[in-house]
Length: 86
Length: 181
View (tube, rainbow over the protein chains, first blue to last red):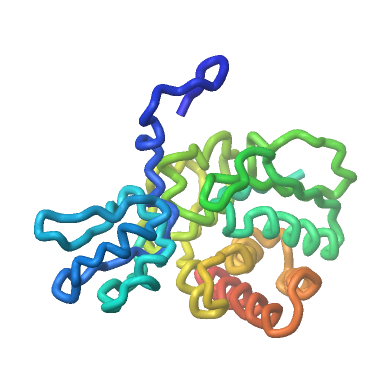
């Protein structure tokens, strides 16, 4: 992202910086097991876990850095980490 | 003088790899120099580190713009950073990728070695930190450093079982690339 003099950027530009390439493991959500408690969305440091229309949750893999905190917090153990090919 | 540029992400140990490669090269009898690019150093951000090898004292202090060798620790960097920028013809690139048919953006005359260092690092170390594995691959692909000084360098940095694990990871990569080269 190019910055102008004074380093002032238009708001919302961080969305251009897709951080999904950082991860080694990606979270795989199992909606069958989901109680819709929303803890995964609450703890996600990237804020990339979104509620779906059914009220379950899914990650935005464009931004997920693969930290695995959602896996740790999920009370139903309904999320697992899977190695990604790259 | 031969020059190496290491591309990685913060936390993958690019700077450590540069230091240890320089250490191993020096022990092998050449002059060497290692230093990082000063920029963002947070986890995940693209980083660079540099190594120079020479039969004479290295007086140059600039960053490396025309490397003979590059190491790419993470193939997803290739979209963000022009990793092959300025590479000399006849250069050698070592790319950490699972794809054996990797060829995105490789300039003509550059030989590419691919190695699935992430899997080796996960199996040997338990963490996806690929620097020591790629050092083994670098040693085998370029011949700039031998396995024995590399092991000394690793043991000077790590101790106990961590040293053994890193040496094993480097040896596995060395044998894998050495068999292919």
